[in-house]
Length: 139
Image (cartoon, rainbow, N blue to C red; front, side, top):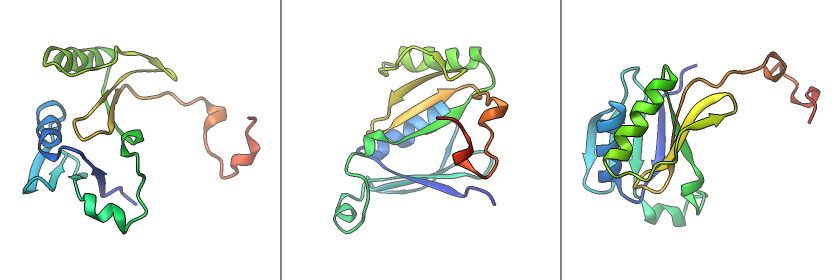
């Protein structure tokens, strides 16, 4: 099975579309006014940002979408730092990169209200690997 798409509620779809193109290399497939942008990465994953506030009334969706985040994996510590410097230089409020669970990463808030994580691969210790019985791990 392959993850096909991610759909995020956004406060500002136009700004988010531009950010994903400029910093993360996504290409825009469809724009529907200020209500929706559909983008795709080089591996075929589709990312949709939408501002369908009216649908929130009829749909069980979190009322605080800013707690959601998506992550972009970088190959190295230096790649994380380089993207941090680009975003900072362009005026984004970006938390400084730091070690997070063994990965080098930083977060920033997109104009749409959710967070974006930029990180190196998080190493998993063998005892953390899922074996089909989550109750078998110590708390």
